Image 1 (cartoon, rainbow over the protein chains, first blue to last red):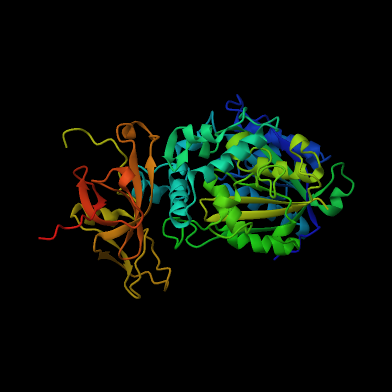
Image 2 (cartoon, one colour):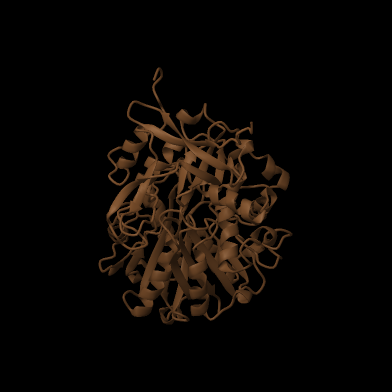
Length: 389
Length: 143
């Protein structure tokens, strides 16, 4: 375990407009987000000496979000760290943790982490493809009509219902709460409250998933700047400490269906490491921003992060517990379900705002400890513990 | 085949998987098994996760299993599936212990139940490709 507690911080965040049609190239979006994050941190591009793009598909070193493109555009002549996490949807958390260890070790001083793209107007996220197991998937799943993330994630959602009696309405409670939070967020693309009736009446995509169980497809990018606590001392924003973090690869990480129990999320392995490093317990957590590609992804992470026992996630999300004002507000910005799909960098941006006291109408009173959790198909996971003090 | 088959087909150039389809064409459901320790595995991979052996054989299976989980697909992913929806994608736990993705025939989606006994049936979808699918094992009437 690294010793990053109180040594590494998120000093700046930046978010472009979130929309369904950016009218911009992905390269432009990444640069815009980075520029905003660097300015928010009170730094200039010359202060940046590391970059971590989020998506290997688009971000080969010379690709649109790659290290070389980044440095060349910003005129940075001495970039000394480029890194990339190959954890799919868990990449952002893993990259931020890696960046924290890198600045703590002195490998770089200030690292920009990027996330986003044209997930709606470009290659639509919901259209499949780009999966890490493309060969196995195209050979052994596609011939049977299993071709999308919604279909794949529906399988453990159904299994959870079988094993634990989880109900459709309990998945709905997650969608409804998240939409409620989105109404307080100016960047949210989904306007208007959702009732349980709206949820249940939304068209079926891949049972048990209705349309409103599924994340948005969005255009946009977000970025953050990770540096040392020492460097941040003279910067304008209140620093947000990366107090703990971890990656996890659970059993059979590359293939969900042959795990002994497909309802278990690998964040179960990362959470204790991240919490121990941060010196916190689950009771200290004021809010959580949880990667919500689908409602079940949230439910399984709630359980496996340790907020409740395995199997009790369904009752946990009921009764407003995960809403602002509840015991554990989750996805206070509207998440991937109702704000925008920015690969969870929007979750990081929201957590930073909460801990700075800049979350506006969605502010959790006196928020000091936030958890940001990511999952790719339950197999790859990353967890960050961020603190304001 | 009177009409051209339009749904996705396995890519026979995929090294790890191509042998599977040579057996299904003969209406045999075979899966990789470690020659050294006898552990079955799915998907086909070079190494046995139990003993790290790379000696693999394609072992015959009983063709029997149970339903582990499923999704009923209503939103078609492309033209070829428009006339198929709603259809069930099923995860079948074979008696040998591994789980396969397949479809369930002769059973309306609303009658699917976790744990229901299933048996393999072979669907010759093109001249080259036979897809193993499953159907419920019906209780035989006592005479």
